[in-house]
Length: 353
Image (cartoon, rainbow, N blue to C red; front, side, top):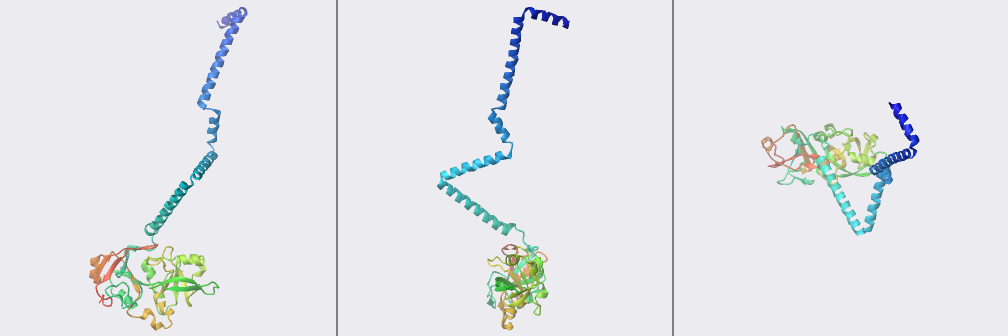
């Protein structure tokens, strides 16, 4: 059947060549028109050649860099076109950024930064305010600073405070230099503290060791503890400094260790201490030791703090110590001391009789 159709078609082609040629031309035109239509549809879908090239370029990272550069150039042209507006905008941004940075720095240091002491809520300040050293006989009706004799009497009279420490009300300035060094002496703020000062605060040394009660005896060898900031800034964190001899106003002291970072003393002050010296070494800086403030009974020059092993309430304080208690504001510098202020109802010389 197929062979018969092929034979008949061939015979027709032999006798009707012109018609067969026209049919072939029409068929080829149909194919070409369909191909052209498909090409147009493809171009419409893909877009122009420039659009295709742009899509290819956008795949690489260099397109992002070029777009950023173009934005920067456009922004610079706009700023240069309006110099007055540009100056106001830049100044406003600078002030806003600076103010936010300063506020965050303060909030971080006072509220967010972890304090370097242990259990600050167990620390209590004994006294009723901030007075400056020194007052003979203390301040009448206001007991915030005490003499050394009174401080020695405290541990024998309390039942709730596991430790009681003392520190000087002022921060004397000393000339400190490493023994044998050719460098000039450095002016350093210091503080006299009791031997249990650091253990009462719950501090750990950054290097070496901190003061102990054995260092705060009249016959003890002179030792001191240096602040971390001074150790880093003035001595580049030299580990060999620990255990070496320091000349403090001409008096040789052995550097026992370095206080932990972030510890700037026990009070909020613009000139915090960077050297801590035992209380019993205070007479070493007096020409006549018997005239030292340490031995001056009645000369109030010490602040006193205590650490309790349990939470104290105002009624408990009043019953156990016959003292009036009130919640005081926390002392915050690089660390926080949560304190309750205990105000004496009578003279400190007989408050614990």
